[in-house]
Length: 137
Image: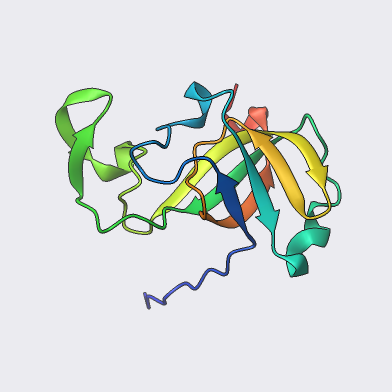
């Protein structure tokens, strides 16, 4: 099988109070009061036209401050090192993160969200509607 590179073009960026990795919550669900904004690039803004306040969305983003990875890594959930794919570590081969957030408001090309756990400047690569029937709560 031939392996090809994948190029992702951000659809927007996060604006949040978290300026470094240390101050950023490790998961959105532990930060229900954490608010942020997804500022959509103008050419993608029309794509959020059917989103509404109160909805949950899944945000797929790039861990843009990751500097490499280890296939075996420490885990918050275990006393022993584990495989990176059994963790939610930001240090992973493709540096992609996924968080479920709640839309608080939408104004023009800006989505105001709660449950934010993303650093300021984080590139957003996709947004999908959250579907609890796909395994969530």
